Amino acid sequence: MTANQGTSNPTGLGTEGFPGFQVELAREMPMKLDSGESIGPFTAAYTTYGKLNKLKSNVVLVCHALTGDQYVSETHPITGKPGWWQQMVGRGKPLDTDRYFIICVNVLGGCMGSSGPRDVDPVQNEPWGLNFPAITIGDMVRAQALLLDSLGIENLFCVIGGSMGAMQVLEWATKFPNRVFSAIPIAGAARHSAQNIAFHEVGRQAIVADPEWHDGNYIQKNTKPKGGLSVARMAAHITYMSETALHRKFGRRLQAGDAVRVGSDDIFQVQSYLRHQGSTFVERFDANSYLYITRALDYFDIAAEYDGILANAFEGTPVRFCLISFTSDWLFPTEESRNIVRALNAVTANVSFVEINTDKGHDAFLLDEPEFERTVSGFLDGVAEHRGLI
Amino acid sequence: MSVKLERDKNIIPTDVLKRPDLQIISNMVVAGSRVLDIGCGNGALLDYLGRNKGVDGRGIELSQSGVNACVANGLSVIQGDADTDLEHYPQDAFDYVVLTRTIQATKNPLEVVKSLVRIGRHAVVSFENFGHWRLRLKTLLTGRMPVVGDDGHSWYDTSNIRVCTIRDFATMCDQLGLRVQRALSLSRSGSIRELKSTGVIANVFGEEAIFLLTRN
Image (tube, rainbow over all chains, first blue to last red; front, side):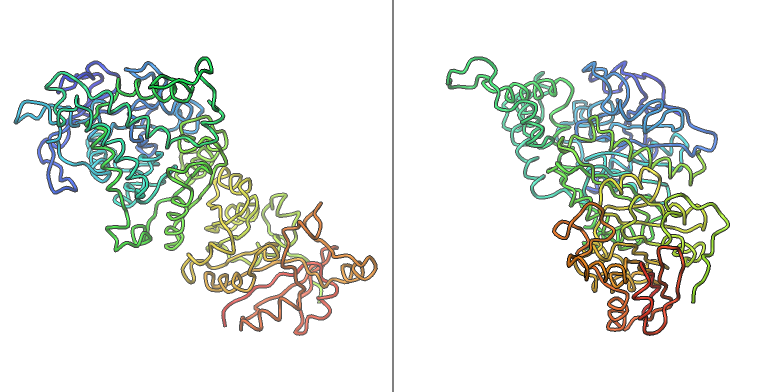
């Protein structure tokens, strides 16, 4: 293992001393990217929980979503908030750290220690900005595979993730079927829909329209396109929640007073909530990373490489699948998961599929949903029995 | 002909024991085969077949609570509908496709049965026989529609929308040109009859029927 706890980020751009590991990959041979370009060496930042068993058969790879990171089950080094999947990962939890060795890697193109557009291009000796190569979900997964190689881990007991994490799970299952024993894509899709690409475009346009963006060279100008990134986050955040959940949380309640006012003041509580979401997001996320990663999601379309027939991507798959969707998720609706289930049935793959009844929308996988947690634990228990882990 | 029920040597879980149709079906299924259970409920049959007969089992269930219970118990079950989700499976994907006490709740039983024998090399269908004398008598005496197997419901809200008799079902199999490998009728007392060609007796005395079908 070449990683060291808490090694400093070679780019020196703000993740020094953060918990977790960093490792330099593709040192001898650059990694081919889907764009045709190559990258290497590059850095992968990751965290682990639990202990690797002797047979190395208990590895669970957790794939994070668009704005997630590797701090799954520990205090976030920037926000100070609990890990984004604290309720799922830990002792006695569905991803039980007494049983499994859990790895989560910051995606390639990200901004929490893995190589991304804010790192320094060693040739130009300045931040990559938009000169960083385009990244796809496939590239993220290949980078994770290189990391596992470097750790001497051949097989994954399970790959699990929600939203963009689900896309990585599907990419793993289709590109490395023999390295994956089971896969849990949650609130995902086999391709990004036109509607979702459209929402992302709103976010990207907000960023590039911010004068502080400086064609992506804001680091050199010692500034940040905070306004644009914040608007991007606000627009996206609306898509993560259901109308019912928003109404339950805020209704039409006013911030203060009931006078009819003009201007940009916070009048409704929901406004101030969104603004808060936007302003805290810019503290922990890089605007160019947001551009790169939203693009990666947009490019995602598994069937495209298989003559448009999704089932062909899964032909002969030995992977045990458990798909989970949420009734009120309108960003990745149940029909998207059902599409994948149908494709898996067409090749008689081993598949389970549960639609969880909830009004919490797309973000339900990040929230307290006992039925969802029971589904994950039950499925994993069944698979662990087959794998001889229990 | 009345035959004693053949009990498996292994312990059958309570749910399977409670339902004689499931006992018989589990005896019909060859060990180690691939089984799709449509309308698998809480997964009792799949669980039993997996543990005791080494069956590679999958399930489809309409109710969310049923699916969740199955998956939480480690069974491979998807949320789906017999009317809409069978077309996606390839031909001969399974050795047995099982449909127990579910056909009466489908919108299009004819298409469902066609799918069963396409997806499976064998299809096993069990259903409540509405030709049973007690139901006939009840209708005659009370003048009201019988509702069977759907406790607490009336004709206007029962999920059992396509009820049939043993003769109805046998006629449909004929029309579809299917081969009936085995047909059994069960009575409340637990006695089992092999169906004769006409099925007239069974249609009167059998409370439930089980058909093992194949394509001709």
